[in-house]
Length: 309
Ligand SMILES: *[C@@H]1O[C@H](CO)[C@@H](O)[C@H](O)[C@H]1NC(C)=O
Ligand SMILES: *[C@@H]1O[C@H](CO)[C@@H](O)[C@H](O)[C@H]1NC(C)=O
Ligand SMILES: *[C@@H]1O[C@H](CO)[C@@H](O)[C@H](O)[C@H]1NC(C)=O
Image (tube, rainbow, N blue to C red; front, side, top):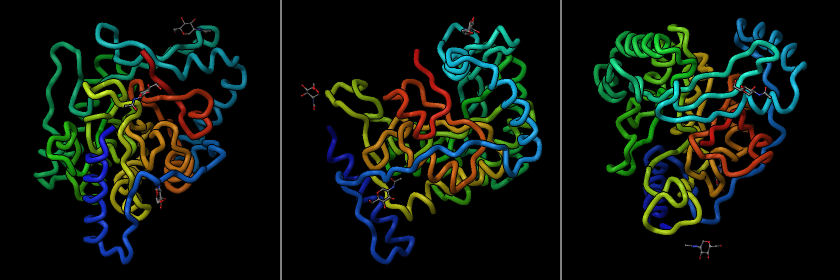
């Protein structure tokens, strides 16, 4: 376990809460837990005219599927060497093919003749929204050209509480407004190319150390937990995702870390509560690769699609 890491994160968040003017900062502790938020809201496409039509078409088709077919369609496998790092099953009986989900937020991973696009923080440094959109569109066009259905990006956050955090530079930076603007422009660009964007990682994915149990030399039994008070969650971490939802993002990836000692891909308060109820997200939540730690419980908490190798 890594108590010192957790308390450093706690102190940093406490400091941030104080800066943002919280009167009585809620000190994150190991005792933090996530309140239950059930049932998962049923998607309708509300707020997105084209989506409502797609939803009614989909409902008619899904009604004809067996459980095995539904599970096939929402479970991905694969890695390097296959068409995509994630490939879901299809439903041949109904003429439906699987989806191809490919890394990364900065361009195509494991591909030939593909471009390495500038990092999110580089684009954000230009303060140019049109350029941010153009970069998204160009990435989307390349993914589309390779037969990708879902580009696994763009990234929001981390804030950079840990300078060694491997993903710090992938997003637009630590300011929530800037991060949201960058995320939304990238989403519009990618999706205008005919590819589904996947905003990630939901949420408070501040560090890569101890992100998965068994991943480090130190024997830990659980992933790190980011313990975050409600105000910081809404005003800092969830804010950019709200912009992505308004921009019509089709999918969101839940993260490896726990939040308040509850796994990102099994946290009902975050997926059912904040993302689907409060922000009105109508797309699908996909687990980070191997970030699903349970079965039915994860679906009830709001997880829609999974990847396991
Ligand atoms: C995390 O814990 C804090 C303190 O108990 C609580 O206010 C907040 O709502 C929790 N957030 C989530 C997403 O569980
Ligand atoms: C699951 O998907 C694969 C790949 O598309 C397909 O070959 C297989 O027949 C599907 N299984 C069922 C039960 O439809
Ligand atoms: C992890 O779990 C195993 C089996 O329950 C236990 O023996 C071990 O002590 C645990 N390790 C830590 C670091 O908690």
